[in-house]
Amino acid sequence: MSVMFHGIGVSKGIAIGQAYVLYRERPEILEYAIAPGRIEHEIARFHTARAQAQKQLEAIKQKFSADVPHDITHFIDTHLLMLDDPVLCEGTVEHIRHRVCNAEWALQSQCDRLEKVFDDMDDAYLKTRKDDILHVVQRIQRCLACDTDADAPEDLQGDHLKGRIIIADDLTPADTLVMRHQKIAGFITEFGGPLSHTAILARNLGIPAIVGVRNVRQLIKAGDWLVVDGGQGMLIAEPDSHSLRHFRDLQKDEKRRQQNLFSLKNKPAVTTDGRRINLNGNIDGPDDVRTLRQYDHTGVGLYRTEMLFMERDEWPSEQEQFEVYSRALRALKGHPLTIRTADLGADKEMRDTLQHGPMAHNPALGLRAIRRCLKEPHLFMLQLKAILRTGAYGPVNMMIPMLTCVSELDQVIVLIEQAKTELRAERKRFNPHLPLGAMIEVPAAALSATAFARKLDFLSIGTNDLIQYTLAMDRIDDEVSHLFKPLHPSVLKLIDMTLQAGEKIGIEVSLCGEMASDPLYTRLLLGMGLRNFSVQAGSLLEIKHIINHSHLGKLATLVRPMLDLATPDEIEQAVNEMNRQFA
Ligand code: PEP
Ligand code: MG
Image (cartoon, rainbow, N blue to C red):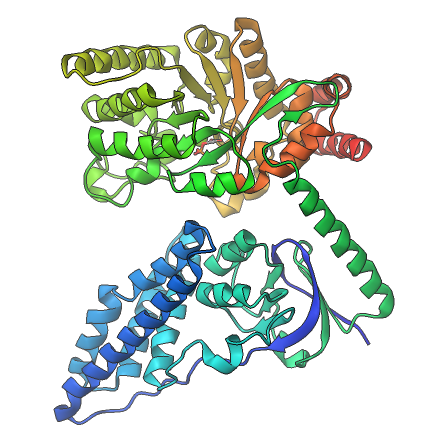
């Protein structure tokens, strides 16, 4: 008889296969006293286990790094870094000395301390990093228990996992990489959340996955036939022939759809009535260009430069910035690169040494983005000069975040002119005509979009912030996430005003917030007049597919009346109806 389970679907797709139940219980850790003369021996045991864990992770990284992108092996790097964490290493050694106890117990005590620190964090993403600490500690614990291959050869090595659905209490990112190599069909875990590294990896690797299916290992036997619907978070054990046929058909449709999508790679995005639409990608650094190019050879509509400024003690020099931006430009091989100046503050806070005074009460409304840069013009100047210099070597645009008032833009323009004067005096090559644009992500800017447009070469709508500031809901606060409504009539009016301002003044308007990457909104935005999208790499082909099946003329007629509807629900209903009509 078939049984259905529900969990959190973290990676879309349908998998059908036999269960492989992984029993790798957390080792039971007991405290016992050691003889004082054995302290150094116990510390050496701990160091040997740590070194063994490091060797295992490095071996996994080496084995798989050739065929997976950098951002995936990056998870292994995080675990390698954690192996060097002072609380974990020195803390454990101290604990052994102090309590004269076994290494396992000392390590567990440090792990508990770190878990508590993560539990007390407010940030939902950082909280989930606790899983990484647990994974690293368990790996060392297994090495201490003389389970010399912590990847359990009988479990994860060999090719007996091919086509199987793995059922486990929890999986580490390293497990996920190893299993992907074995061509597993999908996985289910009892624990873990949608923001865990394992879940992110599963999405990046395209493995259907569900997490948080409690006690599933007690109810499923090895060899049971399973269906995993990662999109719905649904697991069916021993499906009847009718549902098996249904899911096999869905699976075939999805496979065909994906293959068809890849046939769009390097083809233009053109509507059925012949309008060419610009489709670009969003990146956080030069390495992301590689991921982008796996999907499409396209330009970058938003390069978030903040990564370069975070996790360090000093503002990066002009030369360092120039080299990093140039690397991204070279990797794009002639496609345009739109570099956004530093949007620091609020959710992208810098280290203490760089923070400007004490933490603000409302950081999202505080000294963020261009406000901070204008407060520290000598540091902002380094970035302006680096971007102008990069522009001498290819198609580069500069984009300013979070402007609220045209006078701020005037100050930026003065600083850019000053940067050019300095570069001339220093005899450095730069582009004196580098296109300048603004992000429209504050209602005040959308309402003044025409005034901004008159002074600029392009606008780009940042819907993530535009929604946050229009609806007065903090985008990183879980408690108000239900208020995040891209289809709120006020949000759509502000987008519409910005598009019309661009049209009136004759400059391009792009949209680079998450709304552009969500296929639900593509036709709505096209119908409103958007002609430039900048999206996440993984969404490029799907958005292109929708564009290529849309008729701009018809969409414009359907969409106009939607902008007069009163509630987000009414608009959503109308948008869904329109999407069904064109699908
Ligand atoms: C936005 O606000 O929509 C945007 C693209 O910028 P960020 O998400 O980096 O704030
Ligand atoms: Mg923003």
